[in-house]
Image 1 (tube, rainbow, N blue to C red):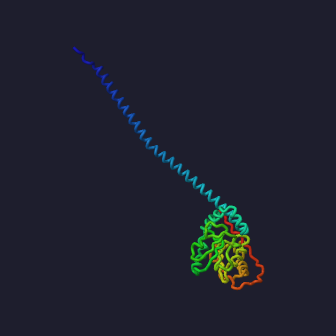
Image 2: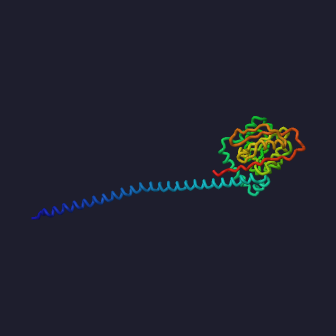
Image 3: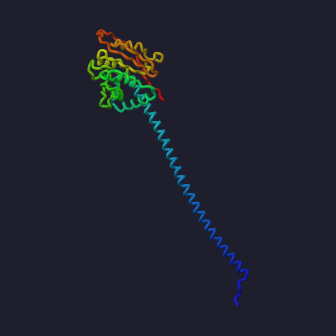
Length: 289
């Protein structure tokens, strides 16, 4: 007759079974926790990667901004150096200066345009309007034309003259010795271009190429004609221009940045003209911004 398992054995067997079940549940729990942890890590990785990318991008952005500021400062400094050179040398010296390195002309005009962008009104636009209100048959000589903006905005025939030509329409020359014939021009324009210690020779050249009764239009920085700050007396300047063989037609001091002077060449010239005493025009030197 078989012996029935004792109570102790049954109880031991039941505890063993329970322990085994608990071990399985614990292993499953650990496995689930591992999976959850890996999923959390995977979620965090893209976030960390994105942060790193943003940080890197911001670093490049700050670096780029810094470099741009440095380039602007260097460019501005270069412009001021060239600008001072042009105001304190003769036209021939300026011509030779740019012949040695034509790229400097581009540097100068880029800086010039940046400076002009701060002006509320451009004198060239007033001259353009004056020409548009006049006859389109008038032949114009633009002394120190820069980017030839005047010629590009009027119907008139315009001889664009400057020290360097980056445009087929611009004639590169010394402003005191242009290739234009005598008495062929109706309007001579100097728009912020009476630069150089021999500016009077530019005006003499304008007088030569102008027809009798032709117009001379001068736009200049106002401070250059302010005696209170070391500028020339506008009355003495106008007197000198008139002694050259012009009559003063209009003086416009209404703009706070520049003045406009309008002259007409006399029909009859004085062959015994005395030596003209020209006032000194102080250089227009831009301050560092």
